[in-house]
Length: 490
Image (cartoon, helix red, strand yellow):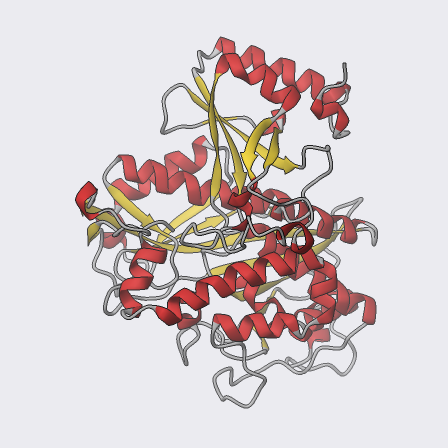
């Protein structure tokens, strides 16, 4: 009899051997339960926890998942009307809260360092007829990576992620006060801020940072450094460079892992761009990226010598022609990609003058005020482009996929980059969207990105995000809305 995994076309001899190794390891290490995790539209892991006896069946046949979890906004409200009969037309394969099937990847197994005798497996959703769910965000990135591969290219990414850690003073779990969404915990700071990279503040935050370190390394993530950022209770994690899909997988694991591990020790970690406190400093997610040769791994953005006649304001001073075209593509689609990089109402509060965050569609050479920061010099194997418009709540798969689709369009059309900026806050260039609504409209106007992501994905994102905007507009207390909507759970 053909198993569901075989019907999906993913079960072959190597996967069968991987399943055997996994089951043997689970038995040898005394694992008692395994979480089957899937990344939702908002970059949050959802899934079910299986007892080990159920694991062999899940590897062969998957586990069911209610389809509405793919259609929820940041409050966990379903943004589509699933019972009025129109959903299958809007979103083929979905309807009446039907079941999807999560199929685990045996190669993704981790032992969770904060949860005794608990393992974890990444899974992806399928329809019950064994066809893939196209709006699964990891599949969206896989498709983008494949587009690059047809050009003999791959994307390498390095992550710099700012976030906040607070000590929990009151978890506020009184059932008499339950609401949807619930009140976030009452918290205090782990360091007072406004002393960038101060060793004394790092020592003050050492207990929490040690939990972050052990969690990241226990999950086999390539953590490079932990740093004290400028804002009160703000920190940053920096990761070594890896391929695009692995980088996205790692970001999902990192965010979800550190929040869980810190919570167990009495801390509240938040990847919200601007936590709901006075004098807070906004957090960004800076995405370093370079195109490399798929076969040999050589950096294809690197230039060995400056282009004849070029100046420091020319991309050709540092970047190869391929690198310049990619840079120009990112600029050409900057407004359309913004909703993938900054997908929340909260995140757009970061784009302010002289705040080390961009406001306009510009690039600069080692310029932290520009949207795109070009780093490296001629002959430097680490030549790269840093995108600075991302917020740490962004779905990693959609964020990175937007870079590939935008940059590759520049490569294929051989676009030329404009001169570098030396005045990123002058206000004379095309402005980035200043709200989530404006970002959604910019995506609607970007035919290339809409086609690259596919209409089902764009339709789902648009409906879910407009639900978020509509509820925010109706809220009497906008600050209270953001505390519950974002800070309590992200």
